[in-house]
Length: 529
Image (cartoon, rainbow, N blue to C red; front, side, top):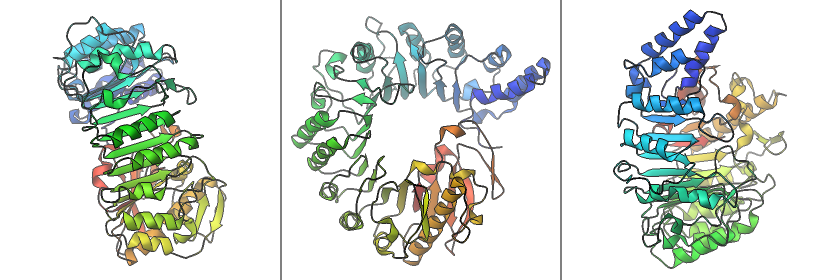
C-alpha cells in the first residue's frame, strides 16, 4: 500500500461509508476499530479532518485511550465545513474532546480553516506548547487575555488568515496583536486571505499596518514575510518601521494587487539600509504589467539575492537580474499571458553567461522565451492553441545550458499539462503517430522533450540527469490508482524518470511529496505542472 504519511481521517470515513452502503452497520463498526488499530502507529504523522463525520463510532475509536493514532500525530489540520468557516457546534465539542485526548505537547504544527474564539485558542496553546508552526483565524480579539507567551515559546512561524472586506479587515487584523507580540521566537509571518475567498476579491491591507500590533516602539526581527491575496496600496506603512531589514531574508508577494506604491517604498527602504534579503518571490495577477517597472527598480536597489522567482505579465530587464549575478543560484520567470514576449534566446544567454553560480533555472512554456525551437526536440504542444509544432533541430540555446558550469536543474512551469498523467503509457506515442486526444498529445510531447533534451545534455557533458514533474489539478484530490510500469502510484506522489546510461527515460517511480526535494536535490529537470 502507498505511504500513509498524509493519510487523513477522510479516507477512514470513506472506507466506513463503503461498508455502510452494504447495509451492514455491525461490519462498519468493525472496520472502524480494525482499521484504526492495525495501521502502523508511526504512519499517523499528519492528520486532517473537519471533526464533523457522522460516524460517532469512528470518532470514539480515534480518541480512545488505547488509540494507535493520537500519540503519533505531529501535524494537525482542521478543515472547514462551510464557506463562512465558523465553528459548528459538533465541531467545537469534538475539538475539545480531541485536544483533551491528544498527548500534551506532541503537535509541532497546527493549521485551521475554522475561525477560533479566544477561549478555544487558549485551550489549544495550553494543551500543545511545542508548536513550531501555527496557522489560525481568530474571530475575536485576544486583547485582555492572560499572558500567552509561556504557551507560545516554541512557535517560529505564524500564518494569519484575514476574513472581511476593506472596512472590516483592519479591525480583524488587530485581533492578532497579542498573539504576535507574545511569540518570542517568531521569525516567519504570513498574512493572507482565506482559501475560499474569490480570486477577484483580494482583501485590502490599506489600514492593516504593524503599528496596530502595539505602540509601534519595537521591531520584529523576522526572517520571512509573506503577503498573499492582498491589496498593497499607498497607505501601507513602511515595513522598515516595524521589521528589521537586517534580518529579513525572504520576502514573498503572492497573488497581490495594486503593488506599485508598496514596491516603490520597499525600493527606497532597501536602498537606504543594510539589506539581508536573499530570497524574493513576486507573483502578481494578470493585468499588473504596470508594476513591472517598480519590481525592476526594487531588484536594482540592492544586491545579494540568491533566489529570484517572478510571475508577471512582462519580464524585468536582464540587467536587474545580472545585478545579482555574484550570488544568484536560482532564477525563474513565468507568465499567465499566453502572448507574452518573455525573454529572447539572446537575453537568456546573457543571463546564463553572467550568472555562473546558477544551479536552478525556471522557464515558463507559456511565454515565447528563448525561441523554443532552439531547444532541440522534434515536437511540442503549444500550450496556447494545443497544436503540434514541428520544430527545427537547432540546439543553440541548449548548448548554453549544457556548457553552464553549475546548472543542474531546469524547472519548466506550465499548468496546461495537468492532465498528461491520465495516459497509460507515453512511450506508445511518437511523432510518427500523432494522437488525437489532447491528454495523450501532451504526454507524448513531454516524453519526447524529456528524452531528447536529456540525451543531448548527456552527450555534451551536462550534470542534468533526472526528470520530475507533479500534478496539481484539483480533480485528483481524491485518492486514485494509476498503473504505470507495474507501479501503483497515489495522486499525491511525484513522478521521476531517470536517464540511464543510454540517456532514455526508462522507468518511473513514486516519490512521496514530503521527500521529493531532498531526493531530487541532485542533478534534475523539474516539470512543475
